[in-house]
Length: 231
Image 1 (cartoon, rainbow, N blue to C red):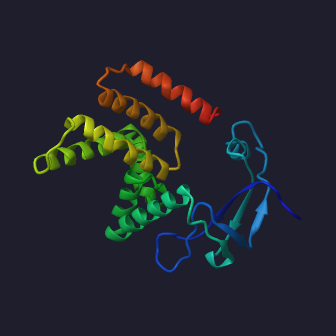
Image 2: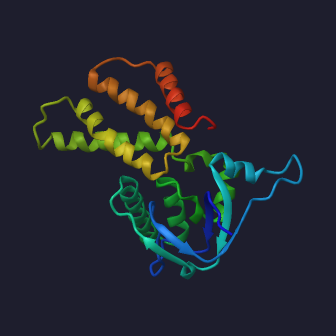
Image 3: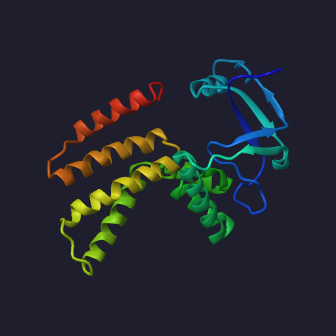
């Protein structure tokens, strides 16, 4: 039977290890596996996984036991989303190969939000300490990137004459990097909220106007509601 609709397919593999075929946003693939309609919940206290997928417009779920059952029919190398996805993959692969496995999982979770490589012991420790939110890309990560760019702009200003004030120049340089970083996270709602508020602050620095936190939060609320009303 022919199925029409968005399908979530799970592949059992470590996509960062060499020798595995990798898939990127925009690829057209063919695979052999099991596809089914998510089951309804059996009781009210159970997590409604079917409803969760429907909110993401996913109608079917599937499972493929081996990457060899996947074939890339067409690879999109021109779209911006595909390019950003490949940049994210290169960064993740570099982190994964630069650290031993326990540390690599933590670094991936903290830097790019990839929590799938985090060991269960570390996950449990983060839950017990109540700091699991630090593994979600949010204002903490946005602030670190902004501060890092500000630091390097100030360092370069000692060697290269700057025609603009350092805060203004660092704000202008930060915005595209922050947008790309949040795009690599898949535009998660927490990351988008932090990005919008940060851009409002940076815009105030560039235009030399004072911004109010409440106004920035309202702007973030309106944009996110339009982007994803069910969030």
